[in-house]
Image (cartoon, rainbow, N blue to C red; front, top):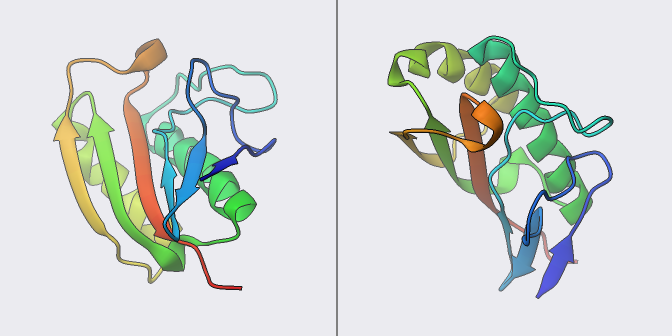
Length: 127
């Protein structure tokens, strides 16, 4: 196993890693809309929070040497499923033509009061 830690994504705020490579796949921890530079949470709209989460995941994917084109599964956690449409619009634009399998669930709460959290599994290209 290999631990992934990108300076361009928020540092772990507990006993976990941003990502782990194992068996040819990257498994990320869930990302919430934390700004890596100052550790602050974006308290904006669901669109703003989703964009920040996806940027954080971009950084972890890049550090691991992979991309959205190799993402096979995402899981989206929302505190309000009424935000699904707005989140989905940002998600679709950000991913371009990548179409990983996805689950979206509503949860009672997320760390630091976030509205959205996303985790993923991606293939690591053979070198």
